[in-house]
Length: 459
Image (cartoon, rainbow, N blue to C red; front, side, top):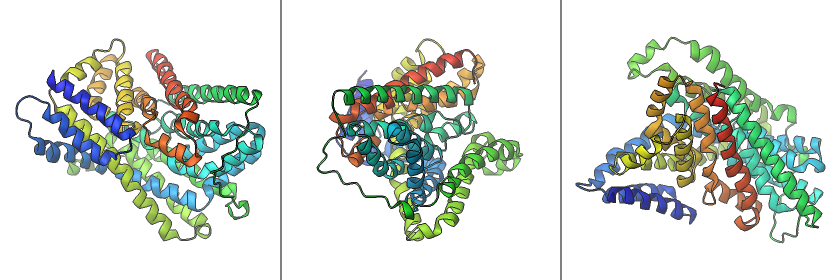
């Protein structure tokens, strides 16, 4: 029992101190070892650090660093070239100020679905989104929720083919690709998009009817976008389309049909466990090369852009790897057996247990990718075995895990939420109700709906 108490204290401190702004790079190893100290018998603190925490840290980095690296470089190219802003401007100008919220959501969604990182999307879209909201006199406090709906929800986890890391993590566990369980993914996307738009539209109409406008934000700094210097929309959208098309074609027609016997000399890994990752890596490489060719003249310093993108990926992969290392230390402790038994004992289909464990851990760590990595690293094989016995398609496991990780991850201590509020100049008090509804409550409802459909054999 003391071991279980230690795990609970460790998890509680991780959530609280992360919210206070202390880096996960520091928190994860320290709090993992704190939990070790609560275990009865010999603790072997340093052995747990070097042989469990760091081994799993390295294993995660080895598996997913290429995606973090290439995704960050691609996002930086789209940002510095003005391509991201060009897409946002084209959509907003087409829809007009009367549909400002829809314009912002769709701009963020297209960029995120095309492989641009969530943070880059928020930075790129904000100036145009703020101008739209101001022109339409929509209260600015609804702007963070609009960006979050487009960037942090359905295109991050549910929409089939999304190249975001949250959709890549389940691939090696279940032998799937980015387009796993497409119907379930589309259903989840419809619930999140439709529910979020309904919520934001009603909230803004009510506020504006009460006489609330954009507001006077004295410290607001919005850089004007010189539209004449942006790439044409027809060019800006090409790399986005390439990521999706190349990823699909390679995953379905090249790597999926390849003879994987050559992998025997690489430790005997199965082709199914790497083909999804290979497809995504290849797609991002193609998109980067083509975007550099197309936008070469639009980027002030190509070397600087590529370098900044590469360096920016390091913190993201290190943070997530630390969370994975933390989870695997917890996994080895005696107290965790009680937690594991409780999670696996959740009644009903194992999809409910999978969704619960993934979402709860994402909430504790404040990271969708970190929470899902811990959950699948600890219980992924168990869920796969249960699914095989019950005849559940592994694709469904992939999609439910991905959608579920995008629920509790965006609680107030989440780094993306804090960054988004900083970009927009809003506070938790002003905007978190709408962020929380669009990125926590509605995605949880979407998860439940998807589990219901999956229970009837929908894939």
